[in-house]
Amino acid sequence: MNKKYISEFIGSFFLVATVIGSGIMGVNMASENNAVALLGNTIATGAILFVLIKMFGPISGAHFNPAVSMVFFLRKELDFKNLLIYIAYQMLGGIVAVISIHYIFEIAIFQISTNIRGELPLLVSEIIATMGLILTILFVRKHDESSVATAVALFITAGYWFTSSTSFANPMVTISRIFTDTFTGIAPASIPYFLIGQIIAVFIAHFIYKAFDEN
Image (cartoon, rainbow, N blue to C red; front, side, top):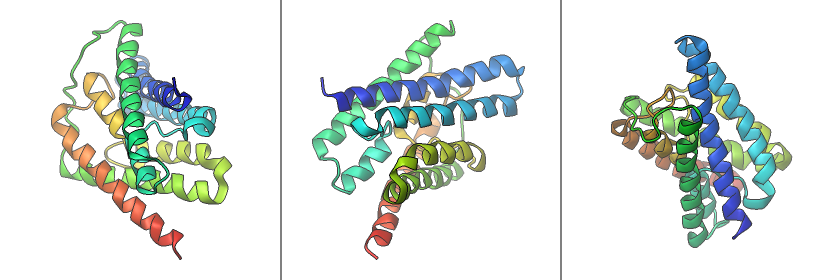
């Protein structure tokens, strides 16, 4: 099978596994102290992003995120067929990760989150988070490609704390988190606000970068 697609599957698997698993571990270890649980969740996510981008960047571009794949499609660096295949493998990796993490933590395999995260303010938060992530990737790649992994890891680490949505910034991760009723889950009712914000951000980031790139 195509190495690019397998890379996207593996990277998406480990990203979602880390987000959900570290959330569960954080709650278990922090005695219901959400600040400590979020800190553990943040550090683990930033760390795994650095590693995964270093691992798979040269193979698939290390997207692990339909929003990132979409912006590269808009930039004509990814054709429509590969856009769809990338997203399919990303989504599959995320769902397999949810099942795997639930199994190893010995909790119910199939869950639907009841964690209502909000409405319009969260939509705006996800616009900011996703736009920032995409601009980080595009600008750092242009000026210092070897630092993309570090920059993305640091942006998401910061984003967990400066955005009210805790910087999901990723439709695949957002959808995967529907299926876990744990610390990092998101209830279906909140999903449209997150996804709409993320999609809007793709186009905003694309046009901002294009404006800089043309001047």
